[in-house]
Amino acid sequence: DSDYRVRAAACEALGKHGEAAEQYLDAVAACFKDTQANVQMAAVVAMQKHGKAGEAEVTVVAQYLKHESWSTRRAACQALGDLGQAAVPHLAAVAGRLSDDDNDVRAAACEALGKHGEARGQTVAAVVAPVLQSSEAGARSMACLLLGNLGEAAEPHLRAVAERLADSDWQVRKAACE
Image 1 (tube, rainbow, N blue to C red):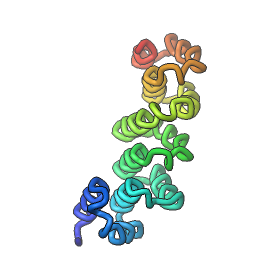
Image 2 (cartoon, rainbow, N blue to C red):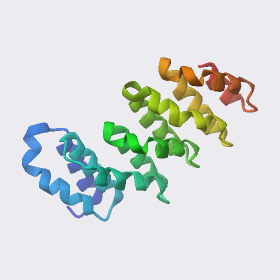
Image 3 (cartoon, one colour):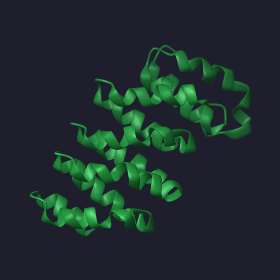
């Protein structure tokens, strides 16, 4: 289709349909080279759901975390949240987006890391804990919330979260309580 939104939606749909979509995966794979970042990321997520996205494709998605467009950075966070184990090498870069200038990107990074937290709690805790020292209050707040939701996996970092109770920003102090 000539509209990138339709191409991205088609990839997303095919990613949801399991074996019934297998015959269309070549078309999805062709979207790895699409000119639109959102289409490329949708294709990678769809192929990963079929077990066919490799490390190189996931790395392409991770590179979009530094894109100039906030919506592309947000989409990269969302995609990496959906990529499961394949995204683990890029979790530190996702955690870096907790300091993004855009609130939607910070929220997407938080959600993506939260998706990985259940299965990879200690890994997520290790990449989020340094964000507690960020100069950006929103990032410190997100880090407190994430670590608070990780349960036992965050235990090695509880002292650092407790120190945020003395933070200069009230939202960070509140997040440290949660």
